[in-house]
Image 1 (spheres, rainbow, N blue to C red):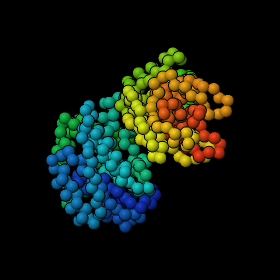
Image 2 (image 1 turned 90 degrees about the vertical axis):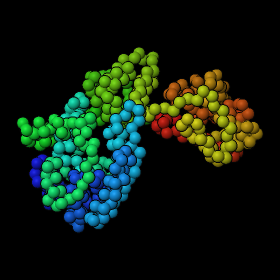
Image 3 (image 1 turned 135 degrees about the vertical axis):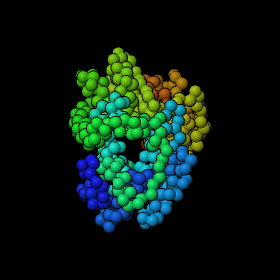
Length: 455
C-alpha cells in the first residue's frame, strides 16, 4: 500500500492495485463526491490496463432532497468518461432506535452485495483520513482489536471482492488531484453537520490533532495494521477452540466452553456467531448472555436474545439461530396433499411426495379429511413399524433429542381427527404404508431449523 500522505495520480494508484487478480468487472462505488470522482477518473485513465470492464455504481438512498440531482450529476460525469453507470435505489429509512447513518450504510452495502458478480471487484474511495476517523470512533466506542483494525484494504464481498485502494492516500492528496484535473463534484451537507459523530471528528477534532501531530493519519494507519494482525491471531485461536467445541448443527459444547477462561469464552462466542451469519451483540450484552448461558444449573434450558439473534442451551450444548417465528395460539389447516402447504408465521412448508411403501398410505389419506395442527399436549403415536406400541409424542421427541423450540413448532398431520404423522419424523399406525402400496413421503422445510441433526 502507498504510504499515507503521498501524492495521488493514476500511476501510484496502479501500483496500489498491482497484485490484484484479473477481474471481469471493476465497479467503482461513485457517490458523486470529490474522493470517488478522483478514483473513477484515475481508473478511467488506467482503463486499458485493468484487464476487465470499468463500471460505476451510484446508490440513491432517497433521503436527501437533492438525491435526484446527485444521480443526474453522476450520469453526466460517467457519460463524459464513457463509463457505464448503474443507479441503485434503496429504502434507507432508519427504524425506531436505529442510527440513520448505520441504516443507510446497511441498505447501501446490501444493494451493492447483490450487484457484485462472481470474481468482480467493488472499489470504494475510502482514504487515510477516513481510516483515521474510523479508528478513533471505534476507540471511543470501546472496541476491541477487530474494531480498532479499522477498514480492511480488501475483503470478500458477496460473490466478489471489496477493495479500498486509497487507504494510503490522504484527503488532501485526492483533492489536489481533483483540482489539478478540474473535476466537478457534489458536496453532501451532512458531511459538515457537527451532530454527526464522524463529521464532528473531521471538522473539530482532527484539525487539532493535525496541528500537533501532522502525521497522525499515517500513525493511526500503522496502529490499525497492528490491531488487524492481533485480531487475525485471536481469530485463529478462537477457530481452533471452536473446532474442538463443535459449534455446527449439533451446537457448541457447554462443558468445553466452561473450561476456557472468560475472555477466551467471549472470543469463541463472537467467532461462532459471525460464522453462523448472526449479529454479535455489544460487549456488555454478550457478557450478560455468557453468564446466563454458562452459569445456569445443568437442569435448566436458558436462552438469551438480542436484535437479530437468539442463543439457547439444550442438553449441554448452545444453539445459535435467527429469531424464531412465534407459535400461533391455535392452528388447524386443511391440506390438499397434492399441493405443498405453506404454514403461517414462518413455520415452514410441508411437502408430500409420491413414493411407494414409505410414509403415509395414499389410500388411508384419501379416506378422510387431512388437517395440520401444532402440538397441544397429550398426543400419542404408534410408529408404523411392526410390533411398535403407542407412545406419547412428547417422549418420542425427547428420546430423539428434538430441541424444545422445534417441538413447539413441529407440524402434526391428522386424518379425520386422528394423528397420522409427526412432521416427517414418524408415521402413526394405521396410516403407515405397506411395503408395496402407493404412498406419500412427507418433508418439512423450515429455514430456522438450521439443519438440526435430530431432524
